[in-house]
Length: 156
Image 1 (tube, rainbow, N blue to C red):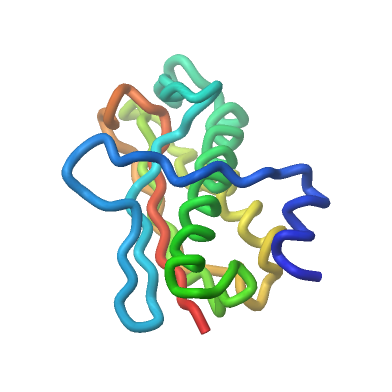
Image 2: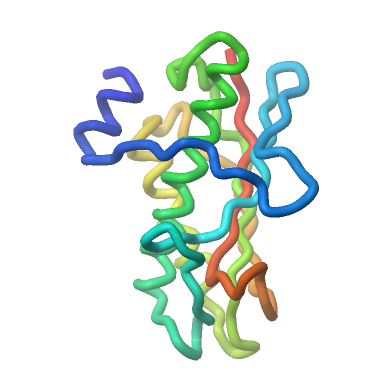
């Protein structure tokens, strides 16, 4: 099954690439690798504000990380189009780096990040979607967002 068909089956419509809020670009391709800039969690088009362990539960954080994954897929689709191809040309999701706005005592950043990782596995399957990953707790993120995630993918 093609990637866009899987997304459709999951009821996911990919958003357009967001306009960067500062001095950076949404993605850079070098060789076969595509580096996606960090995307913050959004809900209703606005930053999804919150802090895990204080104002948000792990389950809410997972939902936010899933929302970030959808935005990342929209940017990855744009990167693929810029390379003259589509999401089916993704050979591998190489790395996910997740920053979770959390209290000093919150220790479930890895579970929050599963919201992103699990969606990537659903969309691309284990051969392409399984990836290396880091999940960090941080004191704050831009605009008070609860989660920020960046991604590296390899194209065929």
